[in-house]
Amino acid sequence: MSAEKAEADLRRQIALIDLAQRKQLNLRLRETDCRKEEFLAMLAHELRNPLAPLRTALALLDKRPDGGNCSPELIDMMRRQVEHMTRIVDDLVEVSRITQGRIVLQLEPVLVGTAVYHAVESVAAIAEARHQHLHVNVCDAALWVNGDITRISQIVVNILSNASKYTPEHGEITVNVEADDESVSIVTQDTGTGISAELLPKIFELFSQGERTLDRSSGGLGIGLSLVKKLVEMHQGTICVYSAGRNLGTTVTVRLPRLHHHERHVAVDRLEPQQGLAKTALHMLVVDDNRDAADALAMLCRSEGHATRVAYSSAEALEAAPLFAPDVALLDIGLPDIDGYELAKQLRRQGDRKPLLIAITGYGQTGDKLRAQAAGFDYHFVKPVNIDSLLKLLASLTVGR
Image (cartoon, rainbow, N blue to C red):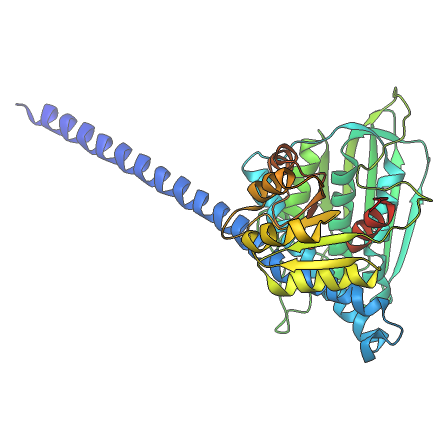
């Protein structure tokens, strides 16, 4: 064998070994990425469990004339922190779902101004607590896009939350809604800390964050803008971030394709009860293996004049239901003995009285809602429950006994 042929064979062998190693490394990277996504999803779900009783307890304190001997300032502070934690958990869930391609937009004609004002309302309390001035300018109230109004509001909420987070007290935050023939632009400007030239190219990367102070006063996980970019792109839009440098503020521009021809219609929230219905005292069965969550929810229902029975397992619920004859059952899904789906089916089969079933769960993806519907649930609430929505629903029910 000539020296040249031997050298060529050696090179081929090295190339084959190198290719096999690269394939193995790619496989390991995919496995690691999959485990990371599974961990984030599970972490978010587990964090929702302690948030649920905290939000319910705050709602109970609000209902007491003396605030449970707790100052209104302390209650407001706790509420802000719970809502902040809830947004962080929601972002974790959303990033995991988008990365796995499990988010489906509910597209319809959307008034951009409506989505923006919903978002501003959501962050107004945060800006007010920091004595920031928040301004909104919508050039035309009749600007439409084809989108998911919940997701568009979520985009703006994340951008505004970032703006407030990195803007000092008494700073200015402005939202301008502009349009041309092709697109609608949502432009958010702040007088905050700005973004360094080194960070700006990486601003949309997952877990990317600016320079931190030792007290970590800005908080967050660095996933907000990554989530926003993915949601904007799902709407066939674009997003860009500009900053002249540190302490020179930041401008975020979201452009969405403009919708010129549309059918005007009124969107109805299935969970929004009709107004003007008489309030009825209900027999309510609350089932959750998290005792704090179950007890707090039962206390809230009793404060509205409803009779409640608490069960900490499916077995207790099935034993109590025939005698208690609930009008409504609030069921956790992740129960340890019999899960909430099977419990719902068994409660439907028990006795002559069929309770209205409401799922109270940390699982809020589209597949989870469809599975709950198939199991017989009438409504589906994600932990931590929006207390106002739940109480409005209960107030709208008229069940004769």
